[in-house]
Image (cartoon, rainbow, N blue to C red; front, side, top):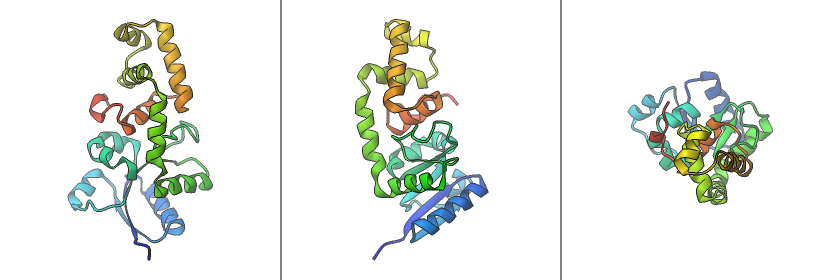
Amino acid sequence: MHRNKQIAIILPDTLQSIGLQSMLTDYFPPVVISHYPTFEALSTSGNDTFDYYFTNAALFVLYADFFLPRRSKTMVLIDGAEGEGGLSATNHITIKASQEIIIEQLEQLFAGDGSSTSNENNKELSTRETDVLQLIVKGSTNKEIADKLNISLNTVLSHRKNITAKLGIKTVSGLTFYAIMNGIISGDDIEL
């Protein structure tokens, strides 16, 4: 007998919450869903027995201390600017994707595929690429990265190109999200 999945949706957008709840109920029963319009509402509920958490990137970053220990069971809704496979190393839902892709992304979360993928991809980055990634997400320019690591500007550009190719992520926001989800940096390292 299947136990009901306990799911917390922490989203201020009512339409996204209702749509997500509808998909989860229709395609992944049995589920028990609790909706919280703010993180504070979740905190004051005192309920931390959820199997899965759904939130947006802004709340994930703001409350990284809560979500990072639960990253294997947290799904982040992104607008899709990274491309359909852009954040393959993280549990995410691309909200502008087709219904079939969203269902695939949900199946990956429930199957537990996200955590093994992130570990594999994290191993692909060299130590120097990880150093460069840390400085990128902290807001350093290419010139500042070159100076801090005592490497040439061309080497920084090569590392950036390799990071983008290995991860399939082209934006700083996507790289930031990847770095947080994979423990390369903490949420405290980022200036909002």
